[in-house]
Picture 1 (cartoon, rainbow, N blue to C red):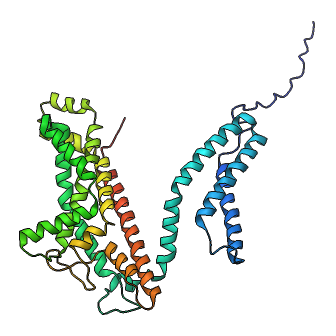
Picture 2 (cartoon, rainbow, N blue to C red):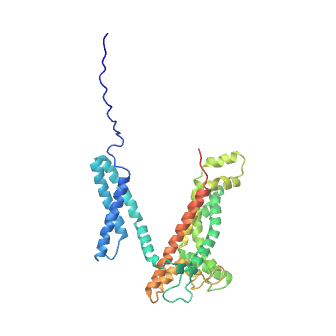
Picture 3 (spheres, one colour):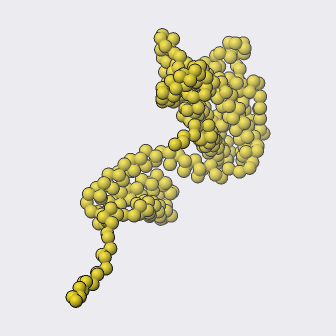
Length: 366
């Protein structure tokens, strides 16, 4: 009998994953970016402490930190991955650099507003008015209330008119009337804000026969003139994005056109419409010229939109900065804090819009 001997089996060599070999881990570019910003920030802090620069420069830190990131990221990729992936990462880093450069004005604005507005961001600023206040102290409660009331009334006027106009242009409008409305909306988009204030002032002065009229509702009308074209244009574009197949499916089931618009078209585009409405509010909430003309300014509380002058945050910031008293620092601090409050109100409005859009947007399922 012959014996067959089998050769000893060798352990299998580990299989190398060629798809991930020589690739930088995903967190590495972010670590390099953060480290570059920290390094340049420390350098600016040292220069500011030595008196070489007037203070910490957030814009320079972000810009030169990102430039340093582009260089380090390219070198690290070339050493670890090779020339072709390094070139890909270099071009991608340049795109990110361009995006950050576009954000530099916003970063500078937010940093400056927060840094100068925090010293007076206290309870008294939000619970007191400027009545009988000279110098330090006081607050902007009267301006905050005025801004919320005037802007809220302007939205109450503009949003229904703008949405209904957009529905007409997209769903019903044909011929000369629709073209005329589109042309007028385009013209209204370019109207300077001070012209809207002069229109509201002249309109109510003639209607009510009061040449020197100043009241909050007039400011709402002036702001609505600026809001309506933005609402119309944004809503019109959102309605055009709704597929015609949805409308045709609804019509095939025998649903009337008006009910199709209410139940199908508007719910499908509600997220975009809400975003457009918030953009229109953000467009007008910081306007100063029309409110200075028709709403006026006051140092006291006024809750009545239809009587007497009413203060708003943009006008409050302007008057505090333009009419500085003694000490001037108190007026400047109130102006910066008013600007910070205005920014926070816009941020809250955007968050509320996102929540509303998420709640009411159609739920997509498989």
